[in-house]
Length: 416
Ligand SMILES: Cc1cc2nc3c(=O)[nH]c(=O)nc-3n(C[C@H](O)[C@H](O)[C@H](O)COP(=O)(O)OP(=O)(O)OC[C@H]3O[C@@H](n4cnc5c(N)ncnc54)[C@H](O)[C@@H]3O)c2cc1C
Ligand SMILES: *[C@@H]1O[C@H](CO)[C@@H](O)[C@H](O)[C@H]1NC(C)=O
Ligand SMILES: *[C@@H]1O[C@H](CO)[C@@H](O)[C@H](O)[C@H]1NC(C)=O
Image 1: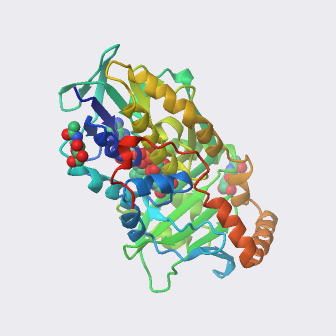
Image 2: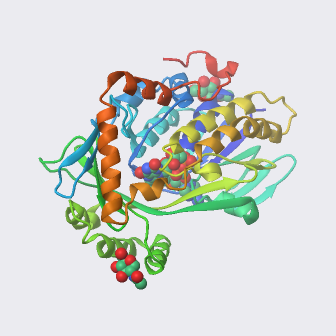
């Protein structure tokens, strides 16, 4: 009998898992809270071994077609002039695989939605997990339906409801990075550049703008609140509604300088306002009997690492691969454990962020900003030396950063 698999969340992890699991002959249902696929989210990229996984899916050409066309990253001075530039072909925060999260989610969904053995249910969530036993996991969906499956994959993101219901609070920790980010789309002006322009305002604030491939610009504002009253305000806003979040942004970014006012002026028209509390998720164990957490649900690394998408895609491949090796009467816990043992060390190293990283990028005072500028200016010059840039890039693009196992079931007809 084919395995019945229920996936919560049609994000990057959920759709990738569905793609690979369909090849194993499983019957898959994906429930997604949003009424249709969310086009939201800014730049993400893929790195290292994940490039191989996307090639195995035959989706690399499609992926590259949706690149954001960003020419590189530049740091702006208070007068709006770039003082350090890192073009994409040197060592840059702009990667060659830059893509919008919403575009990537769409590519993965399009690649799976026609499968006869995958069913997507939008506007649907899991209301209750009624049993997670020896021979099945049973849930009640928000549409009232009872679903019995062999496996439940929680891929509903950083704030997963399934994780919250089915795992003990002491087995899940959130690591607060003391930073908040807000992303949204704004109209493009003729003067806008095809670079990621970053302006470090004083008071630990960053204002930045990036081009997208849809003729608009993506605004990104980040802040590390400086004192207790500011911290309390941002913490409260993260649990509040959009209006409260916009009001706080207007209050705390009004005097930031550079293009802050323009960004604030367009905020209430933005179709895709997204407020993020920069926190990592760490679990002592990713599974419990027939339920397994995947992607941000299990190990959100934060955008500071640039690894969220890679971990979601490679994790989905490895999980599906280990499940494909299960014998007919074997419990999925065996595959869950094999997957976790293999992948956990890579995840843990991806989650390491030196404690000073967010703070260095968010200077509080003028002299710290000067220091940052001096270092960046020097680096920008150093990386115009071609052989040095090449050496760093080879290190960054190392596709063998993880020894990706091959699973026979995925090897035919996939590569491109
Ligand atoms: C709207 C949005 C915007 C984002 N923007 C950025 C960004 O700009 N930069 C960045 O680095 N990362 C961003 N991320 C996070 C990034 O997508 C992840 O770090 C990474 O790609 C791992 O993906 P994931 O599939 O584990 O989680 P996600 O991509 O977060 O996907 C989770 C999915 O589950 C759905 N979901 C949530 N709750 C439920 C529920 N109760 N039941 C069913 N489905 C549910 C969500 O709608 C979403 O489709 C964003 C995520 C989202 C959801
Ligand atoms: C599931 O769908 C895919 C794509 O159409 C197909 O290759 C696979 O054989 C199907 N599996 C089953 C069990 O129907
Ligand atoms: C906290 O910091 C903010 C922003 O710099 C400032 O406006 C506010 O006055 C400070 N509050 C206290 C209590 O120091």
